[in-house]
Image (cartoon, rainbow, N blue to C red):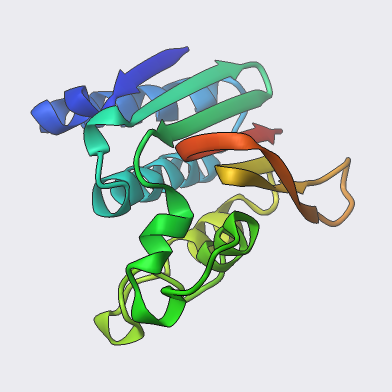
Length: 178
């Protein structure tokens, strides 16, 4: 198990290196391949970068993980402005008012709070591709909506977006099983 606040990550580059190495080592010991453990760290790195680049309150962010035999859970969250407000800063999405649609858009390739010509918005797609074969569930929360991608056994992933109570900021939970 582990918990690392963004304040610790930003205070020293060795904190992230230590956390990444620990996640790699523990996930391999739990039965995941070296390749998969690298994908876990890459996914975390992307999500941490999003907190820094988009939340406008990176000091509120954190990562947490729980690893046991054949199972890994990762959580990344912050209490920043959330996906809808972040996307609203892009003129193309300035009139977007639905949190659920904002989450769906943010999880699409090429969508960002930055205009398309800035070359942003490609981080979540590699996260999905990298975890596609081992993720049991991916859960993204922001505002008053949640987007879940879940897979039973070896079947295809099923996605749904639904309304919940309001949550400030952003929350992502990933569960993987060998």
